[in-house]
Length: 136
Image (tube, rainbow, N blue to C red):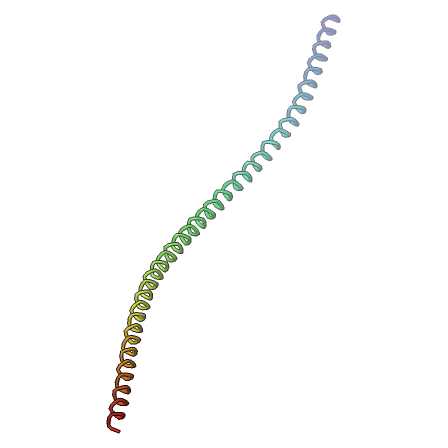
């Protein structure tokens, strides 16, 4: 019986040791579990922040792309306007050249008429002078 008691006592002691070991391991693993849960929560928060930042970057890029497209359209419109004005200037320049040519032609005609008039005036004065000499 004493042996039995001793065995029983030995069993109880082993059970107690194992229970303590289980409790100790349970606490250790519980602490580790909490630690990992905290890391998981931190990583979730970090992932949310990254996701939000990524969304913001995408939205900013969309806005910038839209602005760029608008600027490109503005540049295209300005080029078209410049092209139109250049064409208008070419036409206006051609018209001015034509008008200058016509004006030069008219001036040449006036010069010719003036020359003819002076020639006739000189002839008239000469004839008048000859007539006056003959009459005298």
